[in-house]
Image (cartoon, rainbow, N blue to C red; front, top):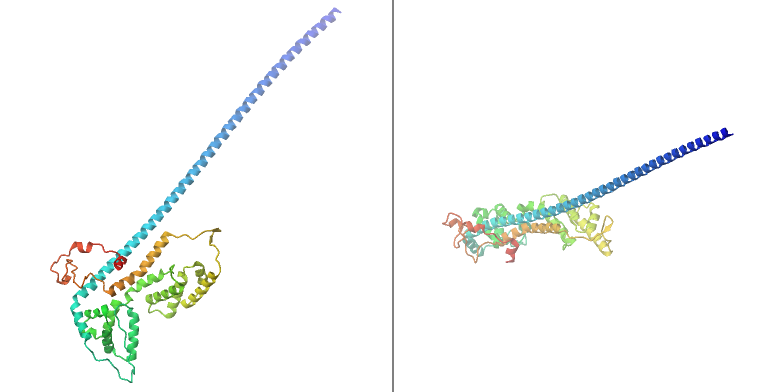
Length: 407
């Protein structure tokens, strides 16, 4: 019995020891698990912090890239704006240079032509007076047999103020009606000359004054439009309707320029060129588009159609002009205005030259002679005793042509 109790006690002791060991082992395992879990939590926290740091760096990098892109865009816009300003400045400078060159060229041409005219006028003044006295004496009336011309046609007077081409046609018609020969035509033409046109006789010999061909050639060189043909061609290419110009006035001026630029061209060529220039130069864009699709061969047809279209548009309200679907108002381009102004000045250029030559504007004051070498009055350059030209005379700038005309 005691042995059994002893065994049982041993067994209980052994069981308790085993249980105690098991508890220790369980406690160790639990502690190990807690340690592993704590390490896992720390690792997870470290990974999360690392991810947050990476995300923050990514956001900062994205923000930096966006800021750089914005700065680059602003810089590009600034460069583009500066380029536009520089281009506008260069265009304005080029326009000013072109205007200055044109004005200088015109002044130089006018000065040279004035000098030539003044020299001829000064050298031939006495001979002009003698010729005027001769022309004032009664002359026998030029008549032809009645069987050729029952009524004598008196040719008009030519004083250099009207178009020589138009006057020559009138004179030729009168000569044909009167059945004049070349010598009679030369005599009648000399009698019909007045004013500045009469001075052309001082440049011709007595023989050439009786030669109708030589006389008309000299008048053509002085008062004709043949030497300005290239100028008329340039005017025709750049001719557009002005804001204050009607369609009829524009069409008439286009026909005039075509005839002056291409006087020997066939009539159908002149009609087609005048119609094309008129259509492309119409100021109203809507009327111009309608005319451009019609293909007119005569300027009269284009003018009639333009008047009809313009009347139709004026009778009904027009819609606002839209560009890319956005309504905008027409803006006045200062550069275009400068080009228009240059075009108008260029159109007036040959007319002003002819007008000044025909009116005989010179540096004579009160009929007194003035030398172009020394600048003194009382003699001309040919008779000047001073052989070296005065440097200050030609260096003085002349005022523009429009200021001279105003004065």
